[in-house]
Image (cartoon, rainbow, N blue to C red; front, side, top):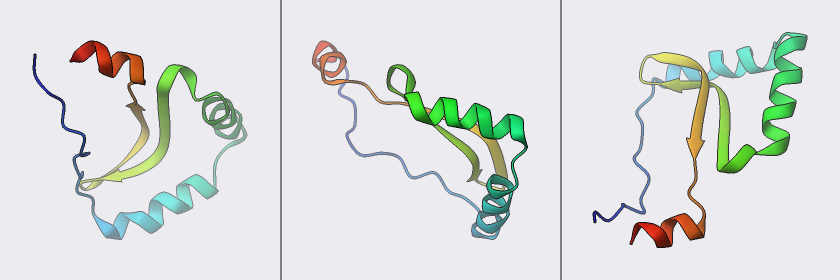
Length: 77
């Protein structure tokens, strides 16, 4: 079995987009606010949600990270 690296890979982003992404988050529609309150509030099943995330030369509307729990990590060994 392969070992998973404990160190997260750093994803490059364009620093010029950071402020624009912040503005997009701060000027959400009512529907977006409701959606994000639900997603952030529950942290569903180990998934971590991020919005308007600058990655490379783009701003992604939705980014989902999955964090393995301790039991899953043990099963991989």
